[in-house]
Length: 296
Length: 313
Image 1: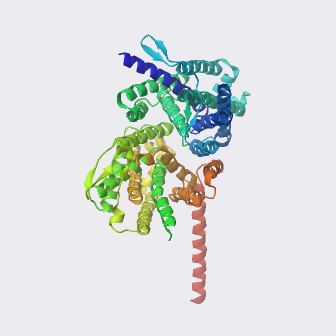
Image 2: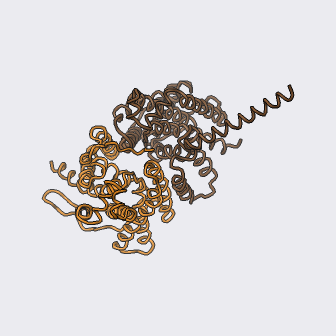
Image 3: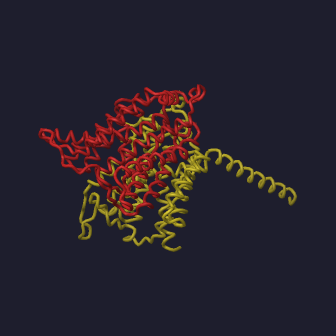
């Protein structure tokens, strides 16, 4: 029983970083209705820049965090300008393949900055685990959880309570109409992309600071985990991203404890497949209507 | 021909099967991130058939293609009602699940006093059929390209057939196709099975070319590359995916002009190309113009011929 509770708790902790990744992912998808495969690699560029400063000049954690977030946001803007802005309305596949090409580019650029396989990453907190009754919680996990809660609330307020959010929702509803009533579509989209990538940057920083190491696999890892969490929760839904992340974290933690890491990944993909087949809209999203990626 | 060129050409040929497989689904309007799974299933099935059971190569390749087609039908049925991104992610989940299952898959038999067969994540060594049968890498390259040529002929025949037209129609507008009396579900499962078989055939050839396969080779990177080849090369003709493979493996990987900067240059080029041509180099329009130009040349040549016939005759 205690094992079960401890695993669930650890799952919530791991899931909160998945939720952050999914939040960034879902923001881009919700606005563009297109998949940005370069989401993870953009985060990786920021993380690698931060790591570079840490490894070369011993930069403090705060600087590393700021550089990681700013780097991810800049990479996100680059992706938007190159893969999304110039594509015609119906060319969703072209955007996706293009963002894949930029994935390759960003990953190679990151490896050029730091060519070794593993680098140390500054830890978030090295304090001893806190005892919560019979359960143990790592302090750095609590920081991740708090960041996720704060950022999710902030994004909800931004989307549903501000003028910018209103404009963004207008764009989602009808781009042309939004343009006609005076919403600066181009600027709004760039900001949304930068914001989403910055959230990803925060998630990336937190995950790496908990792991205390960074490898070139991180870009792919972030894309895949964010994608699974987003799809389970429901595309374009903020509560969906959070719930999807937590569900993924909890399921992964339990299956890892019982069956090991390979079965953990198998279960995660099985869950994703089952969710898609049985409830294609995700737990919180609307079921897919006429939405397609290939249009003429 | 030197060894390096032979290996590059063999590689291009084998990967082309995978690109054609993704292309076939693109025609029906579906993006699959998971064709590498059928490539893997074909590779393992064909490898087991020749290395462990002592089957001849042709039978092994056939088994690989059939196993992959069967798996494709199994995935195709539950994902039938998924569209666009949802289908893409479902195929991705399936393919990654297959890769992990292959990491857990152990099946060995004693061949000539040595254990041979897949050993999970450590891979599957000793698919030595072409060495044991004294087939040189050059001859095997010819085999690969002969089968690829036959497959391409199949694609062209398909393109001219009723089924080919129906598949493109479903890709354009599935509802309209259904209203015209097309059995959309059946056609889509059939397309999935064909695409799976093509990928499985390529996988079987791949296993015998490299003699060693491991689950890691069949990761999502391979699948997305396969998809990208069709879109870079063009969706207008089955030669499009081939052109995409040629550009990537032939030009960039093999020539190694850019070495460390290869992905930076290639990634940027692809992104810029897609802005100008979102349906690839050889898109429907380009193919149409090329056909028209070809017909014109034939017509003028025929006209000249008949004039010269008259003057001489």
